[in-house]
Image 1 (cartoon, rainbow, N blue to C red):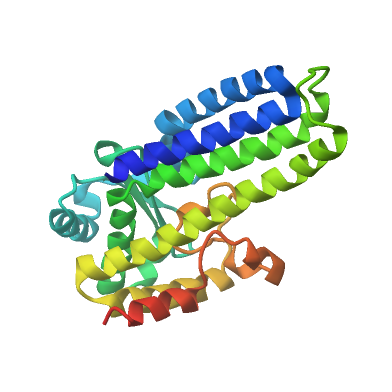
Image 2: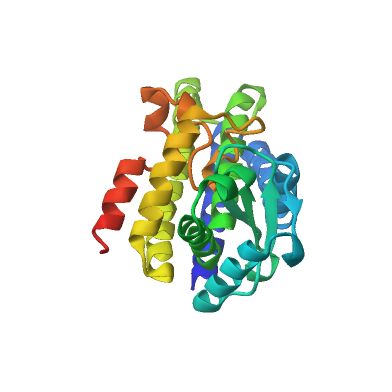
Length: 275
């Protein structure tokens, strides 16, 4: 069912993208949008996981080099009825983590060195459970596709003025309005999907570990450290993948409005309600 929801969202966002291409460029714009969407979805589905792991210099780890981490993940995957994901460590001081991959068999969990150094074993377990919950609900693919389509719509809007001559194009005023509103709408969709999925993964972690207070403690520490450290390779296009926004320390009030993550206070309060 979760996989069906993921594919439905992919198709829906792609159709919106194609419709937008048709509105600003007529038949030629629709064709270009279709080709771009097909290419981007293909890339997002098959290669986005390896690309993001490479971007953050994530290093694969084996059991012999991270026995404790492996035991935590094995224990949680058994509870969640998931296959063992590939494990990676990111050489970054900021404590953080993300999951990626297109399905259960191609999933990966990456944690930073800072997370392993600064968190207790219970807090690490809660964070890993959060990431496994993302895997369970195919959130990695949803997040990647929504971010990809949102970026593509913004790109299409920027080039809208170059689509020429088709009689099906709207009048210039309508086209300008669309070029302003569609990227904003796509961004709002991306933010909404990401925030809702974070709440779901928090709840999944609490139920998987049986201890909501572990994740509450972890989120409090993660938020505090994220505000005091900078992740050097952090990229706005992939910030939504992390359990805590790696740009937390740089967020201004306006940026927070469009944050990919709910506030830590909201997340902790929801976890409190599960006790």
